[in-house]
Image (tube, rainbow, N blue to C red; front, side, top):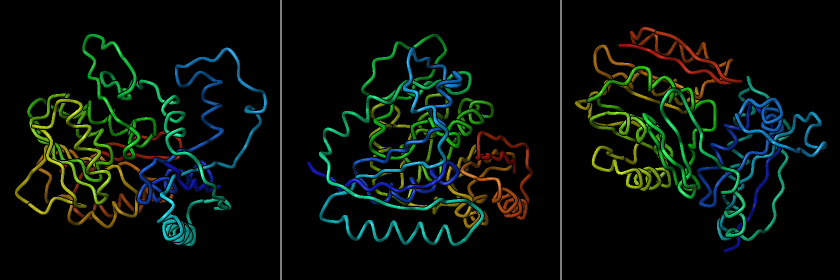
Length: 312
């Protein structure tokens, strides 16, 4: 099947937000090409070592390419909406979005998906969790918790700093038998990991129907469907559902908007893990959640991103 490939030029700092906007309009996936990833490979930060890297790839670049793949019959309207949302985000200031120059071309989607899958690998996060693409054979080691993801369906593979910080914090606070709520679940990676780490019940919510479908599919693939309830919603409407741990890996603006209603589903003494926060929005998020009477236990930082851990 043919797709329209839309490429937007942006920066490392804004690439995650650009990709997040694109996910609303694609069934063919989103790809981020960032020179910083090559630098990480060269330094050995990823744990993967290369015998040879083209010298041209080592030239410093600031331009990051974010690509999405859209069905031709809806491409014009989708691209116009993407352009509008990105322009509004750039106009709000506080983050360098770069030029937001865009290009488009027709491609064969099936060929692209095969190439795209080759770039994924098992990712070790924290002490126990290993995230493994569904098409890769992986031999589980003792005490490892393997989360299998059919990653081309919705955002959330564990590679990004925001997701890995959530998974690290989750492993530190989760107790066997806990109830976990994941707000903005994407692929379902956090809720599924919680279920496999010993949570009794996991509620996963997302406003994107593709994400909801993906989370349900991945929960089934991991054998935890009976523990995972997936809802098409931004938050749980039922205040009687109380989580020992609540996770929200979304943007700072949405976290701030949800702050007054999010604690209603957090047990007294429960832990709230927030991620997807850039430096110049950190104070805004802290202020919003401090106003709800929550206690800040700590914060994490990876690259341009921050995660905050609260207790009620």
